Image (tube, rainbow, N blue to C red):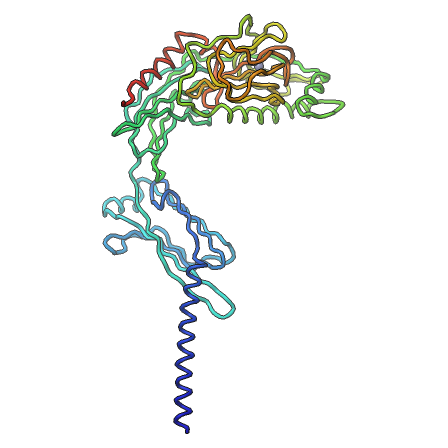
Length: 459
Ligand SMILES: [Zn+2]
């Protein structure tokens, strides 16, 4: 009797233990599958000179430890990251490790030929009954070889406010390359992939300034984020101070333009409204123009030199420094560089494109201080802008040439009288249009260079 009872208890106990074990396994599996943290690793799980960046999302779990180490033939050789105590609370952990070319870790990786790293992690998952721990690892690759830049060629000079060019080759592992001229906006190449290299051509400007330190910097980057940069000497010819002019604004004009541009109904305008137009609105409009003129169409649409509007006179040149004065306020209230040229003709004069191209942007409603405007894409990253128009007679996507009528001049936007504000942009940065009106210059600096560049294209 007693024996039977004991056996029954024993069987039940075994059964209970089994149930507990199976539940624990199912539970751990559940945690592993449904609460595994997600890892977003920078650059294809690769450790490179640009470092290692990882974002770890840990919903419902807390990270106990993270440990990144390099190994060779299964032996752990070097630790690059170790964190054991994470503060509870956050759902996201960011890891950022930077390496310097000469750091001991990089030297070690190179000398020992370490082929991969592991990111080990352990997490804990808590519920009201117990806590479970899970350990796992992620394999990381190593890439400390930046791409190569070679054969940089240029005529080595630019006119202040003008266009320059540079040709260079990059190794095929370069996923991107660009030219930094110090204007805060990079210039990207037209590229041709060959068997063992990429040929690149970049047209650039240093904007209205001399090129910083008389050089430009060519940068190439691979998919792991490894970068290499080389500088090329570029002399700025004809360094000059741009002309200055004083512009006096009366409050009646300011009020009228403020209400027109801001679509407002104010009854008086002063310094506050002037600043809103000349600083905030202008910055917003210029930002939009940069966006509308920065794409590179890999095609030469223009044909020879650009032409100035028929029967027009330049009355305000590129990069003129304008000092603004307002009625009743002592001294200049602001100054800005003029990023184009102003052309005067008869009122409501017909406007033709300066060269062949495709209309890429039209603003019938008025582009802020620029008023009704048209942007034409001429290919290779070159664009022209036509502003303060009275009427617009083309639409986006239309192919135009120098005999097409695209609109009529006017004084929409922040314009004092009927005129055409004409501007040229290369990859979103304005430059002196006068350069493009010169056929010798445009052939030497742009057309000939591009034609020779594409001639090298493999068939
Ligand atoms: Zn203008």
